[in-house]
Image 1 (cartoon, rainbow, N blue to C red):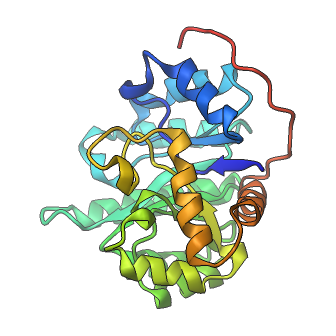
Image 2 (cartoon, helix red, strand yellow):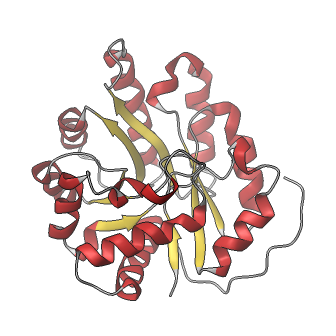
Length: 267
């Protein structure tokens, strides 16, 4: 059984001191691949460095809508250059976040559209961060005719919105939220979706499963989401792992490879 974590911030400070241990634990439970998204330009080099050292890590760089104040005009040019080097598997995480009342919606929209253009020019999928703005993101994807799809990270919309994303070539990412019994709407949606529309993620160190609420999320906790998703869909964990892994490999254009032991290295 092979599992791919499609959204894991392994570059976070929480993992620096025990990075090798966490990665070894993940590999010991068959989590063979991790996609590391970028959120600001000052973190890109660390992500690229980690991915060069480990053949199980893949970079997806982007400028997150929440951190607008940290983004400079020159960062967009740097992202475009990196996107065309052939080392990224996606642009992300990018999108719109209207959760905060003082969100600069116009600024976010411009940032989002510019990064969609870069993704399209480099023929890359995108990792979407969306809060309180699914209709606006869907409208933008339709307006721009974005052809390369991607993943809606930590999907939190309605079933109708999920269906629209799928029509546009996107899959939906499910993580720790699914393990909370109170997340009834997302749980219901997860039971209705076709197999080809689902991938697994952790968002570690954030969004821990219910059993670890209030603590740091770790890559191996993806097994909690896998178990709940399998139970909700009346499928075996092995089968869910099979098709979610196949979906992730298709999205990121990854080919299977033999997992190598993690060696002790400095980050």
